[in-house]
Length: 67
Length: 505
Image (cartoon, rainbow over all chains, first blue to last red; front, side, top):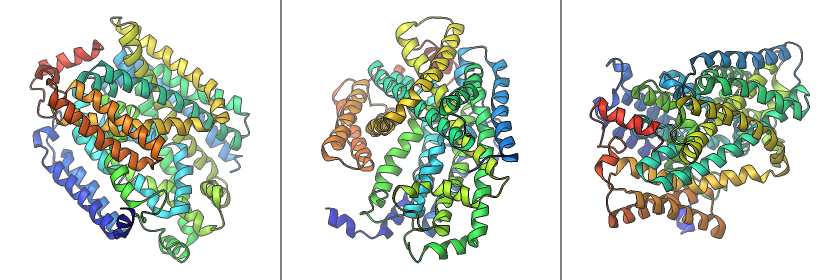
C-alpha cells in the first residue's frame, strides 16, 4: 500500500487540489442568490459573496499551478 | 533584537495605546449580549480582521518561519489549501446557521441540534483547551517582554495581564474585536517591512530563488513526497484540507464567536469570507522570512532552524525598525490572548454556569458573571503560565487532545447542518465513536495526526449515519433553522430561536 502510494506522482496532488478548488467554486455558485444576499443592505454586485469566493479560490488555483 | 531609543518609545506607546483604545468600548456594554457578542453589531470588515488577529499568534511567526527554513514553501499549505477552502465552506454553509440559531457558542448549537450530552462533552473539551492555551500564551508573552525589554518574567506576566485584562474585562467582545483590527494593521506593517527589506537584500524574488534552489530544489514546491515526515502531500490534502482545516474554521469557538456578533447574516458570512484575503497574505509575513533567513544564512541546523525569524530580525533590521517588528510580534500575541480570554469566559458562562448552576437569572447577573470569569481566567493564566514552563508537554498534550476530537466534531457538525435525518443518538454515537477511533490510532498505531483526523472523520460520519438511520428521527420543529433546507421562513421563528438561545436550553 505504502509503496503504491509512494509511486503516485506529485503531479496528481496538484490535480486533486485544483479540482478541489474548482469544485468549491461550482458548489458556491449553486447557493441561491437569495441565500447569498440574505440581510444584505442592497443587492449591489460587489456584495455577491459567490464572486468573492471565486476570486479567492481562483488565486489558489494559480498558486497551486505555479508552485 | 535590541530595543532601545526610538524603538523603545514605539513599543511603550503601542502597549499603552491598546488598552486605552479597548477600554473606550466599555460604554457600549449593558447586557450579556453586548458583552459576549458585541450587541450583535459588528460589521463584516471588523469581523474579518478580528478573525485573522485571533488566528495568528507569535508562535506562528517562529514556527512557520522555522518550517519554511526546513521544508520551504510547503509550509504555506497551512495558510492556503489548509485554510482558504475551509473558510469559504464556513462562510457559505456553517456561519449562517450558527448566526440564525442565535447561539453564543458552538457547543450550544450542537446541544440544540443533537442533545445535552453532546453539548457538555464539547463544552468541557473547549473550556479546558482554551483555559490551558491561555497559560501558554501568557508565558510566551512574559518571555518576549523579558527577552527584548529586560523586564523580569513575573513582572512581564503582570503587565500582559494588565494590558489585556483591563479592556477584555470591561469591554468584552466589542473591545477585543476593535483592538484586533489595530493589532492586525500593526502586524502587517511590521511584517511587510521586514519582508521587503529582506527581499531587497537578497536581490528580489529571483535572487531568493537562485540562492536557495541549488542546495534545496524542493523548497519552492507546495507538495512534497509522501516520505516527508511533516508535509506528505496526501496528508496535506486528506488530513489537513478536508478535515483538520474545516474543523478549525467551522467549529473553533474563538474563531466563530466573531461571526456570531455580526449585525446581520450577510455581515457574518462576508466577515468570514473576507478574512480569507489577509489570511492568504500571511505567508508573506511568516513563510517568506524563513526562506530569506535560509538564503542569507544556510548554516542553521537542528533546533536552531526555529530561530530563523529572530536571526533575521537581529541581523537584518536597522535601528528604527526593531520597535515596529517587536510591536507586530506583541500584536500577534495580544490579539490571540484577548480573543481566547473572551471566548473562554463566554463558554464557561453559557455552557457551564448558565446551564448547570443558575439557569434563570437576570441579564445583568450573567454580565457580571462573565466579567468575573474573565478576571478569574486572567488570574488563572498568571498562575498557570509558569507551570507550562515546567511541563512543556502540556501544550502539545492539549493540541493532541483537540486533534483527537476535531475529526469527529467536524463530522457531526457537518451532518447536523446538512442532513436533517441525523438525530441526537447518531450525533452522540458519532462523536464518541470517532473519538474512540482517533484515540486508537493515536495511542496504538502512533499514526500522524493528519491521518488520524481523516480516519476519525470518516468513522464518525459512518457511525452517525448508521445510528441515525436505525433510531427514531428528531421532530421537525426541533430542527427548523438549524438544518440546511429547513430555513427560517419568517421573523417570528427567528425570534423563537433567539428566545430559545437566551433561555440557555
